[in-house]
Each structure stands twice: as structure tokens, then as C-alpha cells.
Length: 202
Ligand code: GDP
Image (tube, rainbow, N blue to C red):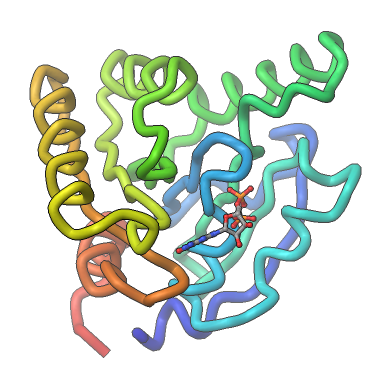
């Protein structure tokens, strides 16, 4: 557990970028398919049980949810993608918001991309990685629920994902992660610290 993340507080939800917090300081986006383990990961990283509940509230799952570590540093929880039961119109609204966020946000430093280790690199994930490559945003993949696989299988999946990321023309890394077993937290904190300009290990 690290102090800056423990202090994380819900700030606000936005459906239009004009309502987003001032675009200054540093922010990191959390992305992933619905059910990838993103909310559990956010809670585990913050050592809080309920922090991500807003992102899971029905009707609010299409919003960008902002969490602040301090006045200069934020985590933005992006809507989980690949959720089938939404109308095309809602999907388009949501894609528009996501595009606008990714295209305009100057304070965005990198994307933490959550993937269920049993279903890594889906088409949606690949599209996001491609987009980050186009925009030259660094990506760090958390292969979540790694407790679901034995060590050998988890490790070979990690190697495969790392191999496929190697072809990208921007910094793209990956690691094993389990919110349930609290494994991989330190490695994830190190990446977040570097993106969020947090120097000291607390
Ligand atoms: P989200 O939709 O991406 O926010 O995913 P959630 O965090 O809600 O997790 C989706 C499902 O995966 C839930 O049933 C969680 O209990 C389960 N899950 C999340 N993290 C882990 C983990 O580390 N290990 C295991 N075994 N299951 C997990």
C-alpha cells in the first residue's frame, strides 16, 4: 500500500469534457473491457473497499469518473467497453466522449489497461493499444485475476502479451496482477508513480 493512492478520493463524474477538472497537473486513465477487474483493481490499489462503487452504479457506467490523489494528480476511470446491452446511440455517445478525452487531455500521462488474464488482447483492447500508439501514449497492461491460473500458465500468457506489445512504437509494458491476492501492486505503483511524477516511495 502506498500513501498517495490510499488518499485517493472520488472527485466527480462527467459526461462532457467541458465539465472535466482543469486540465493541469498529471492524470492516468484506467481502461478495460467490462468485467476485466478494473473496479477491483482500483479498490486494491487505493486499499479501499468501495472507492470504485460510483463507476459501477447502474446508469453511471457511461461516465468518466475522476478520482484525485492530490490537487495535481488524478486517476480517470474510463467506462468499461464491450458491454453489449447498450443501444447504438449510447455506444456512439460514449465513444465520442472517449475520443474527445483521449484527443484533448493534455495532462494525460498514460493508460493502465486492465485485461482478464484468461481473455487477453481482445479486439477492443487491440484497438485501444493501436490508438495509444497513434497518439504515442504509454500503456501498461495489468493481466488481472492472475490467481485464476497456475504460475506457469500465467507466466506464459504474460510473455505472449509482452511479445505482442513489443511491436508497438511506444512504451508498452505488462505485468501479472490479482486484486484478490494483492499481487502485482508494487509493480503497478512504480508505473503510476513515474507517470504521476511521484518521487518518494511512501
Ligand atoms: P470491472 O467491470 O472491470 O470493474 O470488473 P470488476 O472489478 O467488477 O470484476 C469483475 C469480476 O471479476 C467480479 O466478479 C470480481 O469479483 C472478479 N475479480 C476481480 N478481480 C479479481 C481477482 O483478482 N481475482 C479473481 N479471482 N476474481 C476477480
